[in-house]
Image (cartoon, rainbow, N blue to C red; front, side):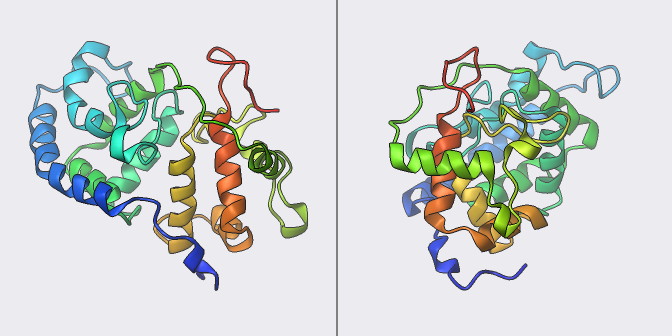
Length: 245
C-alpha cells in the first residue's frame, strides 16, 4: 500500500518500557509454550469442542499476555493485547494462521506470536480458536468518556464517510458491532489502544486489506482515536446497558 504523506501521525502507541518488558519475557514464554504444547494430543476430530480443563495448561503461554480467559492484558501493556474471548472462531483461526506464516508482521508482540505458533499444526490452531470463542469473562468497566470525542467516533462508526467511500463499521461488523460469525470480529468493547494500534499497522503495511488501508489513508489520527474511544465504550447487553446506538 502507499503510506499516506501524513503517516508521521501514526506513531507507535506502545511505550519503550513495554517493548523492553516483552523482550525480557519472550524466552520464558517460549519455554512455557514448548512444555504446554508438548502435552499428549487430543483424541477426536479437530472440529470437536475443546475440553476446557485439558486446554487450560496448553494455553499458559497465551494467558501471559491475553489473560486466563482471553480478556486481554493489563499492567504496563494494558490495552495492547486484544480481548480474544467471544470472538468468532473463524476469525481467530485466520489470524493464528497469519501470525504463524508471518503474514502479520510488526512490533514485538506480533513477532512473539510467530515464534509461539510456527510449529503448531492447523488442527491445533482450530482448537485454540474454538476455546477462546467459547469464553465469556466479564468486560471491565468502560474508561471515562470524552463526550466530544465519543460523539465524533459514534458518527464515524455508525455512518462512515460516504463521500470518501468509507462505509459504516456496522455494515460488516454487525448492527451491535459484536461481529459476524464465522470470520468478522467483534469491535464492541475491544480496547481502544489495541484498535488504534491496528490502524497504525494498516498504515505501516504490517496488516493487509484494502478496506482498512483506505480508511487510514483517508481519516486523521484524531478521527481514528475517536472511533476507538467509542467502540471501546460499548458493552454487550449482558454486561451493561451501554450498547451500540
